[in-house]
Amino acid sequence: MNRTGRHFLQIPGPSPVPEAVLAATARQVIDHRSPEFGELGTRVLSKIRKIFKTEHDVVIYPASGTGAWEAALSNTLSPGDKIMTYETGHFASLWAKLARKIGLVPVIAGENWRAGVDANAIEAELRKDTQREIKAVCVVHNETSTGSTTVIKEVREAIDAAGHPALLMVDSISGLASADLRMDEWGVDVVVAGSQKGLMLPPGLSFNAVGPKALAASKSSDIRRSYWDWGEMLAMNKTGYFPYTPATNLLFGLDTAIDMLLAEGLENVFARHRRMGEATRRAVQSWGLENLCASPRHFSPVLTTVMMPEGHSADAFRRKVLENFNMSLGSGLSKVADRVFRIGHLGEINELTLVGTLAGCEMGFELAGVPHQKGGVDMAMRYLAETSAA
Ligand SMILES: *Cc1c(COP(=O)(O)O)cnc(C)c1O
Picture 1 (spheres, rainbow, N blue to C red):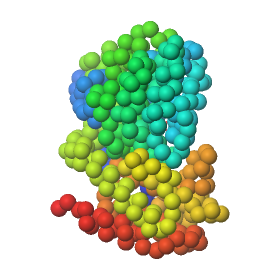
Picture 2: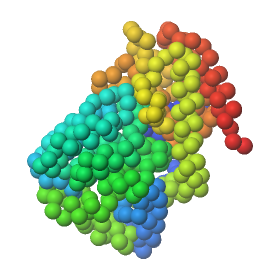
Picture 3: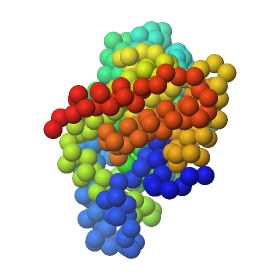
């Protein structure tokens, strides 16, 4: 097992944590009822809105993304309510499963693991719902199991075209801060997000950005909840505090991570991710391999999912890469287990990290006996050199 140099964590989350963020978290814990904490809380809760492109409140939980999924549903809906989902992959399917477990009734508008949400299917299903039984449309922004990104604006337009009052809830756990998301402009009622992907933090924080329609719905929703309840949280947040012990040191890290993202400029952050995605796809194409996402308008800037040639194990290939080159690549999840591997190109990544990542893949194909054409790394390098800005 090769453990020299630094480990390449090229899975689509958790993503590598920048040194400055690590350093910010490596501090003595402070009293979460102290004036110092109140200032930290107030500062972070205010500036995180910029990352969601919202004027509204953002709730921060000491939980993984799954907790924030449950929070979004349980704060706005009531037992027996129907929600509309669209199965873009494993994560969309898991969110629907969670909804079922807490007493909701998911209606699946369609399924496609090789593209983003088909907004026309959502519109058609909503038009059929003349009794207005569907209370929310829940979609995944960036489907981390497949590498497809949904055009959220189209989903908003589909709901409006059907004249339907359902809330729009978006899981942007792996999209936020990597792929453009405009909560207010696109009329998203709740955004669910997590710390360990585009925000470049360790796992352990998750978010609900709450629009006014969702907040109003929370007043009458009666799924039982306590820990996840927005009411007490938002009341305490007004002065920068939390109803229970927050993940203080992750908030120190978040403070720094937001500053880094805003200093680079969100639009530059998104452009950097798009460029990494394009370079990766050129390498994949040149290897003669297939991208799981078959819809160019939905190509993800966050990750690329590569299909293995028939009869070759993605997990055996990933094991070779880990053992020989100290790099972790993402595995195929559920339906595509062992059939695909995922290259994360999000967060703390630049040209040379990506070229190293792609070189590890190309050498791994050789070692694992995966049929491919050489030269994928060259194609990526050529593209990165041609499009470098300075
Ligand atoms: C990572 C991820 C999740 C799950 O989040 P956890 O932090 O593992 O609970 C849900 N949805 C998407 C799109 C994700 O990428």
